[in-house]
Length: 317
Image (tube, rainbow, N blue to C red; front, side, top):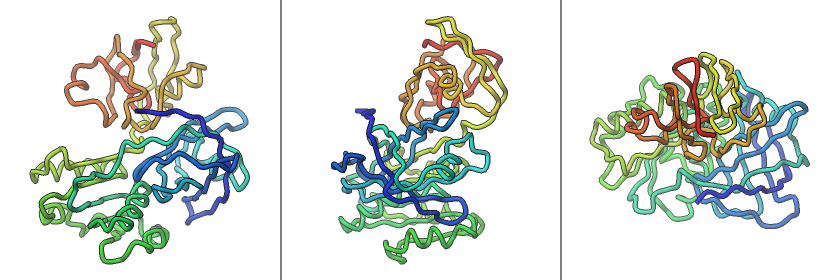
């Protein structure tokens, strides 16, 4: 079930973590308890700038059973469309923000005998709540995190509470033998990956080639593939409204900029909430939700990340 909220939150603290990361601790504005999301959950912040708004989803890094606060870490994207820059520049202690109810599309398997985590960059964030759950339950795990060398101290501090023996930081993919890592895992291990698509694709394809069943492979995208592409137009079949989608704008953002109340949730092509029937045109599918067969059929599109391969799409909205 997908819940939408809204929640009214107050920023309890805002702390810079390195040059591009900022941690926010949020609490209920009325001081009451917050809904829980479980390990791997996320919330969608609804940010309002002077001239426009954003609805960005962030993984919860707070303990999964915490009810008095949520914690998130926001990376300032170099080619930001405004949301992450707004958080870094304008959101501080005392700021009131609106959020959707927490949701979780990246939950920990309850039947795994061991958990193998492979993350890159800000993709570590959902695993921070995983690690707290593993510590509480005594669950076996092994984490491999790849990041830029300059970010190593930040991630090392974040991971320090969870024990060095099962945690491995890699400043580069060079020397990281993914195939050997996957091949030596004991039966019953579940694999989780989050981070840049190039890393997740490599992790999942390597696991598949080694015979890992799909039921033991888990991934969560954070939407980087939404950025960039040729401009196109979208026609809304129910109203006849036609909207231009810019080269650095997602289809969903174009709909929102035109004042259309379009469905959305994770904004990363993972949950399927923004899925709409595609009536005409060819989609450039960039989501992780639809199956390969659904991509090939061309009858559905996820507006948060997918684009058009031609000049125009017609969607049932």
